[in-house]
Length: 156
Image (cartoon, rainbow, N blue to C red; front, top):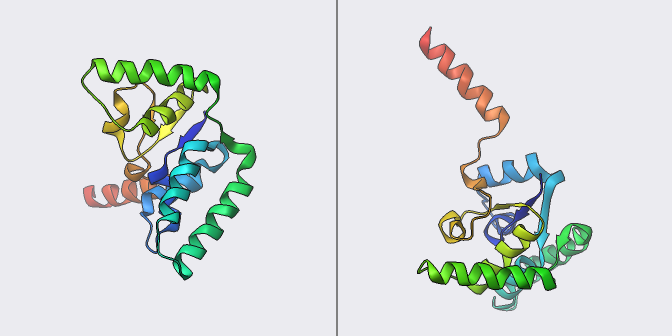
């Protein structure tokens, strides 16, 4: 299974205190995670808006490293993705949902590659009919085992 990672998931690694579930999810699914060109754009745009300083430089350096490290696992917005994006955007409009064009483009990349989108913004993407997972709701296998042990202890 291929997971396309949305901007709000990958941006967790830029935070001083990232959401634990999202980090666990990324660690557990690292081999199947793919970035996409739109997410790289959104991350770079956000960082570029920051005031000049250490934080901005640190984020740009981290984004540069991620972009280089994941270059072979970054899906493009190609001609067929553009074709699918037009259909998906029309579908959303017909349903009275007009979201960000970037979201539609990411959904099209997922559809093109038969991939599941990993995002916190489930509601924004449901209209596109793609498979979605929310890493922020993820519970690692280790945590599941701990919860089962706790539950078993509570029933004794």
